[in-house]
Length: 257
Image (tube, rainbow, N blue to C red; front, side, top):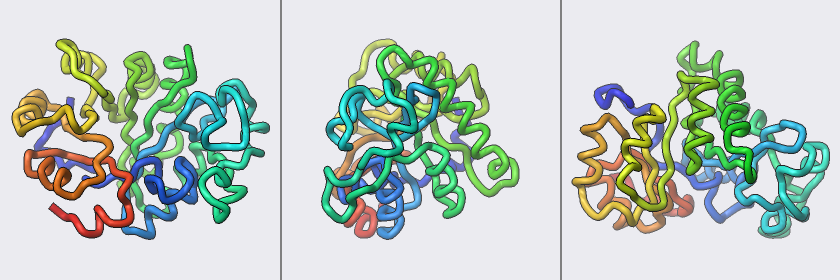
């Protein structure tokens, strides 16, 4: 739980997987393109390689967004680092590699950008991935946070076990529970996990009451994935704290509620 009187250290606008769909998702090229459009906060997906390296990939498998095949978590970083993660998107990005979390941290810290790390474990690796992400974030951002140059990354996941492991490994890092549906226990679950926020599929919010109730419980409320300016205005008018979007080329620059 967080003190809602303390300023929220993250931008209200967060670029989905770096630059939405305008560049190959979860790559440094995507973060750079997002920055060119004026975004300073990014969401990315992180998982563990077979030999314990943290790297960016959304899907369990490599097939959609690289020239590799099979489960990403089954391969060593040496093999993953040789994959082409750009050609699937367009010829301009041919040869773009999968980045390690360490490279993304360096990029964000050098440019004063904020990061929402979605812990995206391979099957049966929720606890291992959550703990590894938290320990790495603690190491990579620690000096900058203590010097007042950066906020911690916000760690989020759909997997309660991953959040629990992140909490146990580095309790000072802020955490958020991702929800694509609501159930009777979801808010209490977020509280038990020590979350500072929930990140909801945006259609779950149909008015200001849900946001007001979460705020009363000490939880910030963010949503994914909003690409329509009118919907963004509506949600911010209802008190929303943050919004994840693919529309990095027009929504942020034309919409400042």
